[in-house]
Image (tube, rainbow, N blue to C red; front, side):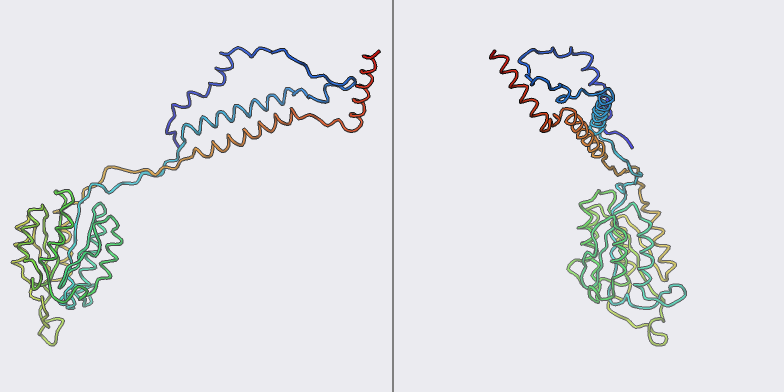
Length: 350
């Protein structure tokens, strides 16, 4: 716990300074209250005792101290939390065309589709980049943003897990995917713009050729890292022949050219191990910058002493009202007062 404005505590002795520095108020004379004869003055005004004055003084000083404490703004500081403010901006462009359903990869010793292998390896990559903003683009015949750049890596991993083959069409629009990634990255700091392109085929459709998109990326300061999936021939088909689908012919030369134009690098993966190695190499080539700034959540506590001061003030006011309350004379006291007034009037007439 700490005080936001501790310098306000210097006003704590202010009541004592006022008490010592100012002269007491002068007693003023004036008309007196005439009371009927025979009625003791103690019935009307009860002089406060020494203990009552001490209680009142204690309540007043306590209320003043609590008000000064509330003005100093006591706060409770939580545990320091690192802020991911200095990482990189990464966009993952994942191919979900028809050829990504080929079951020529292995996961835990079992045959798996290419997309399943990509999901497992990319999820681990996303978890390691805890200081980076990550976006996700899925592309087939068309390219679209699945998640914008965000620090919410759990959401990115979940959206990747929900991706299915053919979601964006069965063909492969590599150029459009690059252009969309550049559009998302060009407004970010130039030294941190990275596009990771993962595909298993050649560009077959789209309004922009991949090399034209790569030149646009180079002018925008976006580095492209290409990962080409090339499954094992003879699996995923009938007998020794693998079924061919649109976009199933990987073009390593194209991916290598895309990387060279933008200052990136190309990786080829024929199985799950090589795919994981490619992502680990990306971790070394584009290390995540560790944040050095921290944030401590703050909770304001000044309402507590302010409320306590209000309660003490109410108690002090109630105590003073109780002292000054005039006691009831009752019927006998009223008759005695009237008789005393009559006798006083007769004596004045005589």
